[in-house]
Structures are given as C-alpha cells and as structure tokens.
Length: 186
Image (spheres, rainbow, N blue to C red):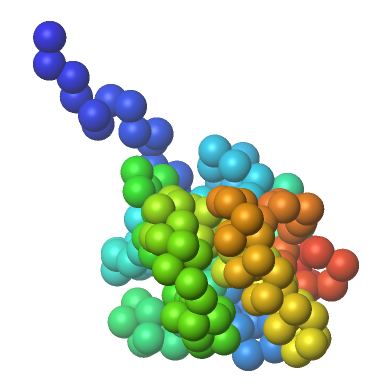
C-alpha cells in the first residue's frame, strides 16, 4: 500500500488580515477562527503567502490564545502592502521547523562553549532551538538577557534540551508585549 503524505497535511488556513504596527514592527493578527486551526497555542512553523507572495515564518502567540505574524519591510515591498492595508493570507503548517536566527550574544556564547554544549545544541530539534532563542530574547533588560545566555549554556551543559518555566503561549517579544500579551496597535 502506498501512503500519500499530502493526506496527512492539515488543510491550508486562509484569512483576511489587516497590517498594523506596534513600535517599529508591522504585523498581522490572525482572526480567532484562523488561530484556532493551528495545532498549538505557542509558536507554529508555517509556509505562508500574502497577496500570493510565498514566505516561511513562525507564527507567534499573542498571549490571548491567538497568534500574529511579523511582516518585515522586504515582504511588504514584495507583496505591495503597508500598515493599514488588508491582505489575503494563507498558512500551511510546515512539516519541518526552519532554523532560528540566533542572536549575536547567544551565538558568541555557543561558539565559546565546550564542544559538549555545541554538540547538544546541534543535536536538539530546530523547534527546541527556537525555544532557547525565544527565552533569551524575552526580556528587555540587558542584565537579565546576559544572565539568560549564561543559564542557557549551563542548562544545555547539564543535558537540558529545552528551557523550562516560561509560558510558551505568551507573547515574549519585550518590545511588543506587556505582561506576556501582545499590545494593541498604536
């Protein structure tokens, strides 16, 4: 019997969203019905399109059981959209997680760490690497961030494969969130 992997893929999620800004970030909040179709209240890796232009991203939680997507300037130019515009979006849950952008301070700590830490980092899943990066970046305080980088190296050295003790469904971007919830545009 032949299996068809397309049969196990969830149906694409289609919705209309409005681009808005918080601080200097442009984003689209998913409507409740679209967010409810995602397999997690936390981050979800997706293949996406906006106005027919494909891109890969990780949908972020908003801390209110919903999600949002960042639309950077390059994607805005390609798709011909800007804040205030309404656009058609399609999301397809990705079968594999992309690699996260590892911030410079975390990357430097990894580079300077013993081989066992680097080996563990390479051995964990991309989703787990996203969680470590997300935890480190979930503070606006430079001292707390530095401490989180150090704690990450220590925990990974101790065999931890994921950070613990933070709400995966919270909005962890300190520039966009207040008390773990995505702020309103303005």
